[in-house]
Image (cartoon, rainbow, N blue to C red):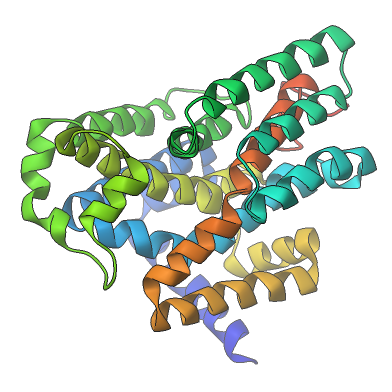
Length: 340
């Protein structure tokens, strides 16, 4: 058995023991997806809040370096591959060209032009396509008027949009899903309060070599008063962590055909079916390469990641436009928005 397979086997064995130790609650979590996702999402919110309060600048820079590439892969997997959009040539042209331009440093407005073009290529009545395309272009024009600040605004909105994807992914039953949302709102309110700033205190100065609080304030809250800027930086740090967790854990769990927990081994086989073995190697190689780069120059690796990865927010916008226009849910089962 190779080391990777042995590690996955050990992880599965450890999780089985942990669930057995929980007794009846563990059996309920295995069977009940609604409760399991709500409990895990709630734990993510609490963990992200603690990380933001304890070491926000470290969380800001380490999160993308470790989870950035895998979460973009999850974007592609669930929004492009699983939906079937990857099999439509017109979408590759209308959406792919602007996304490539963005990854090469093109202006933010290209992403909105691409999203409008994708809306026009959707399989929906023309009045719906034209209406959505006009709305997307209006939003893009509004952000363009802000200049470089538009990128910042889009980044903040993009983090929050992941919650919307999770909420709309499939029909809900019961009320368990309200718990993480209530915690999310409460945590955000805390980070925006004077009490939150007091808890963070001098820890806002803790940063990686080459980074600084001033750089993060300039990057995430340009031109704002320091106290307001600190609140926005904390909010971005918190929501970035939540954003990664949604794409790495919550949506994969929501998208499975079976409601029970899958083993890590089965999840890996499922990922390979969607992305291919070469895709797995690419994801692993890019993640390892980014981490290696960060071990040499953490700040340069962080900048490099965001310079290339800025396209993925618009990928989510384009996929969201298609999902709405074509009345799809993100998953392919038990859905109110059936695939056409």
